[in-house]
Amino acid sequence: MNILEKNAQKYFGLTILLSASLGLFLPSLGMKLNFLVIPSLFVLMFYTALKINFNKLQQSVFKIKYLVIGTLISFIIIPLILYIIAHLFNFNDMQKMSVVLSALAPTILSAPYFVAVMKGDVEFAFILSVLLTFLSPFIIPLELYFLFQSNIDISVVEIFKSILYLIFIPVLIAYIIKKIRLNIDEVLLSKEHTAISVVFFVFIWAIISVNADSILSLSSYILEVLLISIIQEFGFFFVILKISRKFLSNSMSKSFAFSIAVKNTALTAGIAIVYSNDLSLVSSMVVLMHVPMFAYIFWKKDKI
Image (cartoon, rainbow, N blue to C red; front, side, top):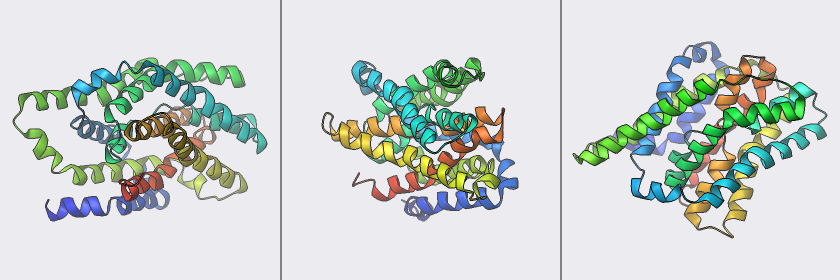
């Protein structure tokens, strides 16, 4: 392992903390990096796909019971719990909708990568991520209408384009590389931490920049939003992890907990910003909470 790769692995947590700080304090430059968000996610999914055992992937498709339970927890239980918490904070309807929209986000697209870091079941994380992303454009508008009688249009076509660009194409490329057996995958994986550090540096900086001014206002509402964001990002992960270990193997429970609890709030922030900054605020705050979560995963990867 060369010096650059070794340091990229060792200081990954500091890298994303730096990018988050730049997102907060240099947001104007960060917003100019938005065009790099999609390519960054593509690279991340490609590196994840290089680690997938494609024979085991077929087995994960038939873990129907856990896929159904994961879907119900992700789209029903978590949003309703956060809706109740928002109600207890006396949030208005727009603020409650912001909380619920964030909670309805599908699994974060980088879930399989971090599950791999934790030595969890990468293949199940991949299947659950695809399923929740596929269902999200249908379920999110229905649930928001049910709770708030509010119509928010989510482009099914755009979501499916994202699934194609950010999941199926990088996975197909990785599959072909692994099939031709020229050790290209080993060469690419030898540069993994360097590539992933660059990807997250760009991604976090760009996403957090969107709501930097609101986040830094530190009003009482922002502090309440921060508490809700911590519950969403950390609370559900540790609770689901602890409960699932009573029924599942250690590797499966890591995959199950992370894939359900850590959500693609960059997606919901992008949807919400079309309507108002206020609606996207909670989703952006949870993106900020991704930073300590990711740093924690790399710090404790062998002990989770």
